[in-house]
Length: 83
Picture 1 (cartoon, rainbow, N blue to C red):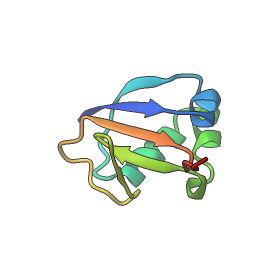
Picture 2: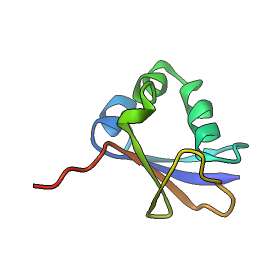
Picture 3: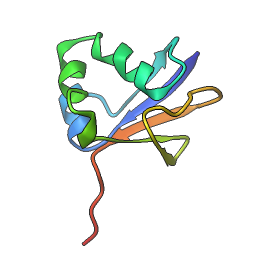
């Protein structure tokens, strides 16, 4: 399955890309993260503390155990704060 992965804020800075198309065999977000972590050190660093990250599938906030079936886009970003 191919999915577009978007990175925001410091996640984008650590990985060095704003977005990329990823071919994955993962069935959920956690599996996708594990695949990404094994790519290169920069991915491992960006995904080293999942408690510091939020995830959205097709622009809807979700959890790391959310299924990827039918997803077109997965976005990773730090928690948002109001102001």
